[in-house]
Image 1 (cartoon, one colour):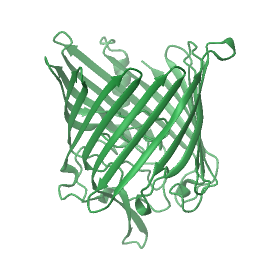
Image 2 (cartoon, rainbow, N blue to C red):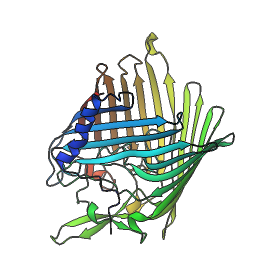
Image 3 (tube, rainbow, N blue to C red):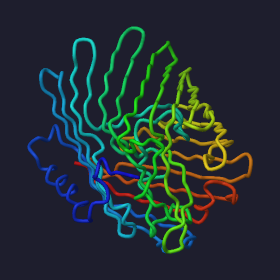
Length: 408
């Protein structure tokens, strides 16, 4: 059964805003060069009535993010902190706080040492992140897999002419976050996150290991990685409960995952590939990949703006309860960057399942209003969802999200 290792989520609303209050106080700190962060107000407007019982129509929330670092010893030692907190008016599970990073770093003559909670990103593709396995998804923040929980670890980094080698000992497992019964973007059956099951008898205390080598060969960036430990992606077991309602119990299996990521920058073209081979304990081996390109038109219409056109193909041979949304999908998109002082950017993509024609639309946009304020917009649309598609339960969760941020 689940045993909480890193009890920083699901704080009360007062606690959730505690971090925000600290952030605001920090805004006036004399240590201006070392403190940074933002506070934000966010609303999600859903376009259809909820598909599942207890869900609310719309959503409003406030969040705060505080970052701090301090270097000394001639820049050879550092402590760093990044904390996040959100209060949500509907979903108690989305009211949560997390220490994204809190670590000590030191540079020695021949290697670098990190100790503490960190966030580490691996990968090059835009629509699916297969090789990025060190940190757990903070799935109640966003369904795109790009918001991560802090992972306690000790890691060593070595840089030589033959490449960069990073070795990680991951100390304790972080369970994925899920929407509560009043939240949107969840399956019909409730997820019983408080009673997660583990294949390892060590549960959350299982010691995971990861290793990544990377090197630059001219225009080519290559990374090869291996992970041995508790899968970040849970399986779900339907479990009858005492009140006759069936819930989904997360089950975290033991896996070994080997991966490769490659990006080639050839003039206006960027070619990208991520591929993994996953062996689950007491189950078979599976393969997944995402590959494609991004072609950039620089200075379109004699302006400073750039337009990137992207295409990626997604494949994943996992089936049954292991099936993924990206089992045989094609994604098309564009990235529009104005290169103006306001930093205006827009990213649009359409993913289509080539087996059942389910479609997923995504739009992200951001623009700086002045030196302190930024507005972000996001839209997700689920169209023609097939009842056998893993995303079928989200068929009525099309939404528009607006967020206003104040940086300090």
